[in-house]
Length: 271
Image (cartoon, rainbow, N blue to C red; front, side, top):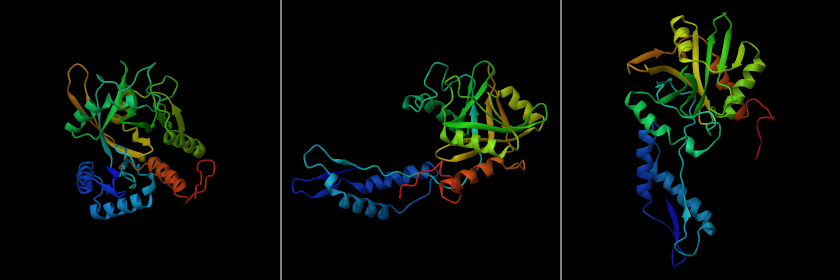
């Protein structure tokens, strides 16, 4: 929406009630909390009044206003992932490891397909070995007992340009290594390894990490078999396994963010 300075030097919003109605509808579709549209419009109106000097005086210039709704609830319920080895998000030599808008365009159509199958995110696989790379736009972590009986937290490495070097990813790795309670490994897990770990009951938690959520649990993967196209449902016991690595990581990170735990090397106080 925009604020316009009229020929009479008055500041006007153009049909702001419709913007509020659209935002409410969008929030409902995204499973975000509802809000009082009238109250938000009052707040926006007051903010524009305070910042009226920023509204340009000459048409066609105007002040662009972008109300934003961001989810900040505690760890969400486990999400379902759609995994299809026939599609890729990034590739070696590309820009998958950089924060660039072009990385999101290839994900839109696959995300819509995932939604049709009842999945909230896409588990991006790569190559003939079906390497697990990312969960939607999040870095992926797997907590399991490896094949030689060691508890292990594994996440893909950053050395080939496929993986986004997330701040939350780095924070998870740093905390896990400080705890020194299990192995922390940066390597690519494969779908074959994952399915075997599930069958052998060695898998305890899968979660994504990112700025929006800190960490987000995974409860289910819908895997499309290459060649046949048949679907296999893999149930992930992230919440029910009894392991609490993900929960501890979430609490520690958010405690630092909200000042309950002081870590001056990770935060910058601005006011």
